[in-house]
Image (tube, rainbow, N blue to C red; front, side, top):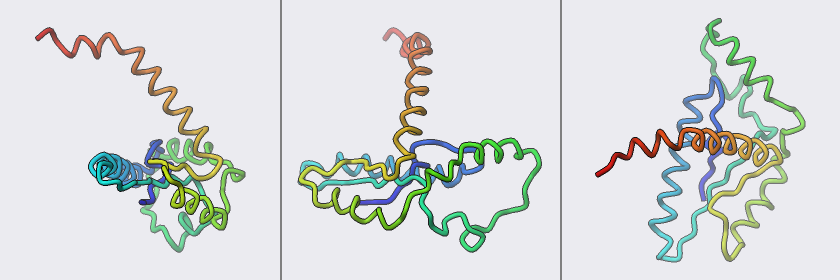
Length: 144
């Protein structure tokens, strides 16, 4: 079991380095799950949304001086924030133990009510874009 984040599924403005670390973890754990499945080993990636923790507090984050060119990106990030989406950390343990105790635990476990709608929206848009460009993709295959 490893802890990723909704940020491992959806890119956010101004959070590129954090997104990159979580996307890398997602890929590594996905590959690991396929490597060890025949051994009966189960892998679960915990993908929490926002929780009421000290994660983004002044005590846990050291921010560089703001660059005005990124003001719009910061506004976009904050515009997507809904305080009602922030989850209670105390509710996490029972959810995680449900996955641990499951006969067939999920490869991915989204935690918090904000994750699934956000990821569904992003992946629907991604699939739509791929469909829109499918003919270009197919042409890139060539005719060997």
